[in-house]
Length: 171
Image (tube, rainbow, N blue to C red; front, side, top):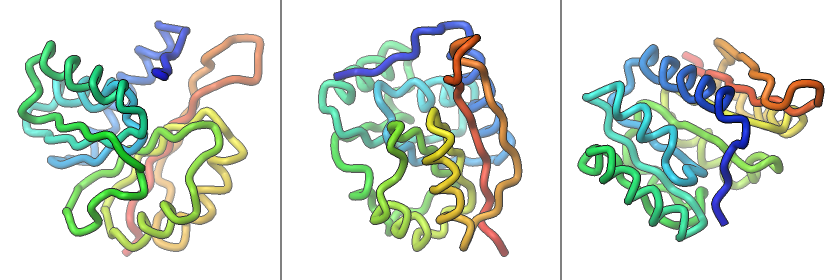
């Protein structure tokens, strides 16, 4: 089942800010876990012509849509997508940036451990769950430092908002 944000203007702003954050890292290779239909990867590839992305999503129908979206936008050569468990990513492959957009439940401990061992220099974590974001950032803080965080009010007059947090590998 595909998931889409229903507040289109705020979702577009989130996409813009995520793409800007990716640009600021100088990343040339990006792994996106929980990529859905490829919105962030494709938007970034359209703005950053040297960026190559690799997305993993559990839902096979979302991956089919991501492949179609990449082709429709002419970035299929730089945006690769695969159906599978996020924790099954190839830790031997080198990436400049890890983009995470997990479900409200956040990251599984096994995935956090794999991320910590990966040594990926930058993480961009998009979250709709402040409690699980806080938990995951605490776990990641053994190797990563938060350098910036922001929030967008996805549904005004409610407690629902989207956050994005940038982490850098500690020296």
